[in-house]
Length: 140
Image (cartoon, rainbow, N blue to C red):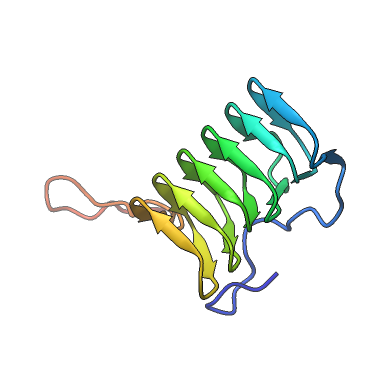
């Protein structure tokens, strides 16, 4: 997957649905998953992904009351809670978020709403070494 700068993003999103929360289902409690998760129903609790390539899809019929943390997110339903993505977030036209959102890359369709702060998480670069005392170290 190429990012906006043309560079490869850190992780590939999961392209399969391993778990489905159906439209007639309500889960009360925290949910931990890996791989691909699609939510068409309701979740009252925090959702956390394990695994760097995990993807969470929230359909237009889905609703979450709780915090959400996953590398890759595709949102078209409603969330009342904070959202954290270490890779990319795609907000589709019917997405409605009430809470703060932290992301690395963001794609937002016309009609999507975020009622909270948008916090961009920059890529972590390697620390630059600086000599203390004004003398550059000599490597032999």
